Image (cartoon, rainbow, N blue to C red; front, side):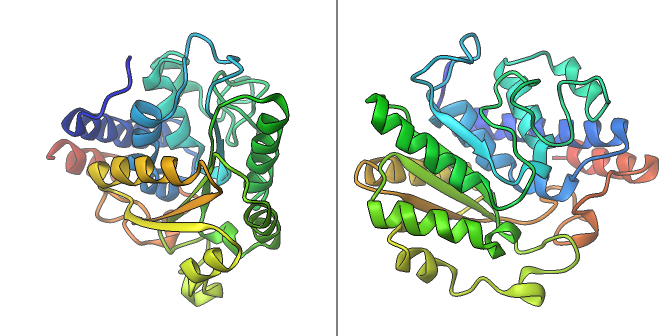
Length: 276
């Protein structure tokens, strides 16, 4: 599948990803549904338009690198990889099984297309920074994109990496924050507010952009803008999203952070999704 900027097509891909997330979580009886649903349009814009990748050459040295720092949201990641052609969609039925390549958290040694194993929150930006530095050493041209959760931005390691990248003006490094404002046990603001979020990134030397994280056209435009700015130094896109987006009874609810739908909830969710 060739990359495209056809917004209508990309919106249909996003809808397919969303329905497969619900299917996969229900079949496995496991998964972080809420945060996987909030990242759907971001992953769609990246994997079906922005990233320079080739599913037939997953080890291609000049491929763009992608790090899912919020590794618990692997459901959305796996569905995007499957639809992009890294492995059969039928493999999603094995999610979270002991013998599966699709573990609860992404494993680079098991799953085709995963550039780095993640799951311990707060580490992804450091990993992406290391890749960006390695690119410079090898004189390669790939871009590194790191998708962070807002909850993990409460962790100090994120800001250590941000401080180094901003201070050294590391190029071709783009961070995206899935800012759905809900984490494991409450809202972000109730636990530990990140605000003034954009100002903090700016203080660490990053260019900061903001976007509606569910608007495909806006995401494509912002990624294009970030790409140009990142030639001179690191860029962060704060993507304002909704936890559980697309299923009304999941939206904005921390209870859906790490919960899979039961039979009744699955039927209700799929009925709602099919009506769109």
